[in-house]
Length: 256
Image 1: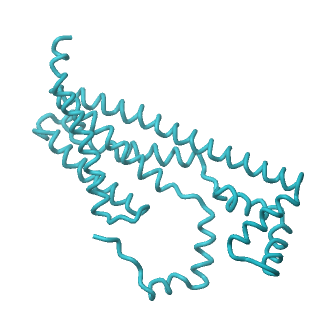
Image 2: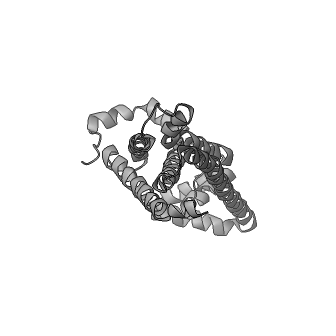
Image 3: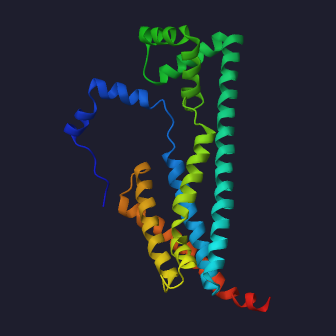
């Protein structure tokens, strides 16, 4: 089912002067929802894989809870730390590129001015309009550098906070990744409350996969049902592999 596209009346309602101004201002702020979504997907997949592997080996619910929480804390922190360092590197490369553009403008302004001229010529400017555009852009040093960053280097002017990116990932990993463990935690406190916690975990995890996939669809041109089923398929495949490995190697536990 294709994603519905807004018609002319809906687009007109979104393009009032006030809404355009508000949207352009809000675009200057980095978003972290994607970090949350992918942290949630990874947390659910890896935790349920641990659950399935241990369940396939026929081990007790206590072992599942211990290994599940170990995965949540260890892998969640690892993923958050990787996101922090990756985002920090991106910001450092961004700062380095900006400093280089400032240096080039300071050292050889005529060459950088010619780059601006060619950039706007490729946009369709010519004659007096082109001369005027070059004059306006190069009159302000920061605007000049911003133009080089976006049009020459293809870099965004919006920097993301490494701490917020890592925090979003960690929170999603812990919160959504905990879902496959809920039934086993309940059984640990009340052994008779849930006769077969693994199947309850499968059900809850399936709902989590579809929900996270539906949220993911906000970032891509994909219907939420297809995105949800896609995430469910990927997570289910990981769980099936983990369960098969656990079942195949479960006999080793008894021999230790």
